[in-house]
Length: 506
Ligand code: HEM
Image 1 (tube, rainbow, N blue to C red):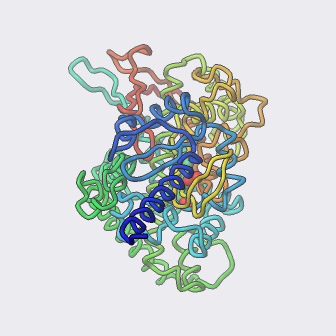
Image 2: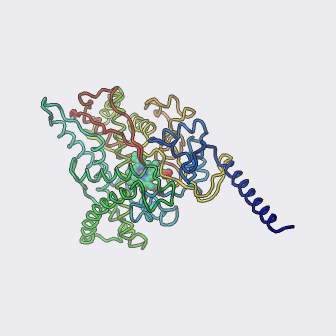
Image 3: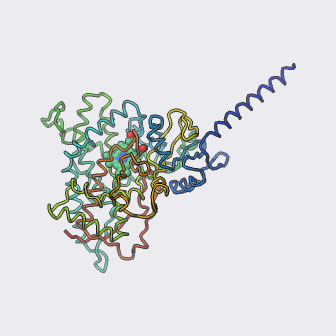
């Protein structure tokens, strides 16, 4: 037989085999919409991916694959599949898909958020648990949170006495900014025993701008992630923007860190003592003495991370709660009544009490269900090929857990679009990662390590604002015209800041 036809036949056979195998493998991927050449399903994403993915999931099912540019991703939209991913196959899906935006932080490779789930990540989670989120530690830091809440009340009281405009109207406050300042100062007190900035100061605005940039542009669909060969060019300038924001934060944190480290070194406290240290930095310096991986660089990255994660999602949640209350005056009234009954006997708001107020907790949970602070959780990735619900998910596939859509799943929630805090009364459904229809903090080994801190901060901020002040919408805004739109990013804040006029009550 002539050699040329033989070679041609072999090549054709190999190509045919290759195409069949890849067709077979593609067939085993979860179903999904047909995409365009090169771009895939990119144009089906839109400005609100949590909404468009939920719409697509209605057609293609709770586990769906999408091709975004050259990258295949899987979208999860039901409690059952979320449980498969975050509980049954937690060991496979606990890796992170690192977006190019995260690389604006020079030391992203040692960040707790982006580290692979290996030894260093475990060491950081353990340190955070021991020195921040453990119940004993949390209780020992309660005075710091009370102090930040008192400062919030003092500040709003002062604003409530101001008048503005030609007609001497009452001044409105931007509730999200207040909550951000409070959460940031709570975190900075926990970290370095000091406020990083005063309310309404340029410093606070600087922090807000940096944090909001990281969260907003960091969540955008970035051409560099979808066509990785374009990464060096950073066509949308996303990495440049996050770098500027991270550089600003790092410079600020450097100042606080050095000041506090000098203070600690000059004090007589022994780093080897076993008693509770007064702040996180002090405790972490202790870790550094025992573990060389816990050096100053690591410490700085961790503190920046805690300040960013701690201030943004917490304040977004508090702002949404207040927006929901302004839209539902009866619920606000009922809540104030509940808080007054417990505070009345003591004369002041205490964290231990507000954590046990059923209606307050129900209002917070119901707001978190409808207004997810982190709609897709953080990006998960598979570290090996695995079968889920009869479909093959290849290694290195990015997983979007559409927690926002899951919390509105009508097969799990009755009238899911309605704000009904009562649904959480006498219910065991909680946000601690056991109920997969409601996972605002995620679940499994990557569950938010700041959850207990966040829960306490949000409860205290909301209870303080509702108990001490009556609130009304500014002139020209009504319940019907209040803008409740959200703005997609890593987090999901209100698109327009919530403005409201406080009147001091107690
Ligand atoms: C209401 C407030 C908060 C919400 C809704 C929230 C939500 C989340 C979510 C959904 C994740 C990703 C989970 C996953 O990928 O499966 C996460 C991760 C994380 N959160 Fe939070 N969070 C909040 C507050 C906080 C606070 C106060 C801190 C710090 C004190 C914090 C620190 C972190 C860190 C470090 C991670 C990354 C964990 C890892 O990758 O191992 N968060 N958070």
